[in-house]
Amino acid sequence: MKDQFRRAALSVSNNIAEGFERGTTAELLSFLYIARGSAGEVRSMLLFCKRLDMLSSEISNFKSQISDLILLAESGSRQIRAWADHLQNTDIQGQRRLNDKTRRAFTAERSTEAFMQKLQAIRDAAGKTEDRLAE
Image 1 (cartoon, one colour):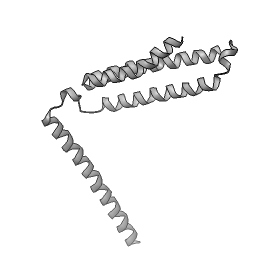
Image 2: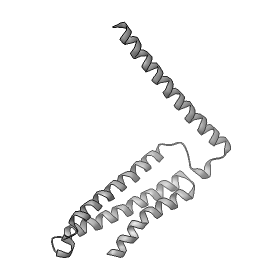
Image 3: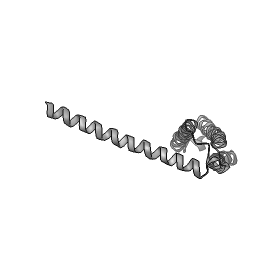
Image 4: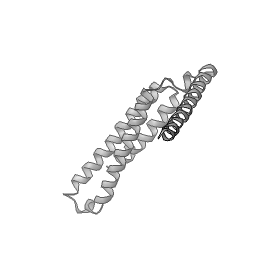
């Protein structure tokens, strides 16, 4: 079981790394879901150990640590899912698909969005000031 824990836990980070290195968003997403599956496998084994606690006095000494690890595994799985959700909603198709023209367009779009957000914040602040002066 110890070896299976190690393989599954290592599989999480290895799949994320491999997906990232593939260079496309679609492949990264695919490997993120594989990584999430490995995180689920770790969580499943931890829950099994927690249940085994009732049968084995050796494991009962580690009940608190097992509970902490379950929480960490759940958190990691949620973070991978959030990353995958973010990637599904992006227009970027991955590093392999970027060229100088698409990089410039993406950078310009982000700069425009940031500028518009600052402009809106200034408008909001001006509106609040006008409201206070009117009172």
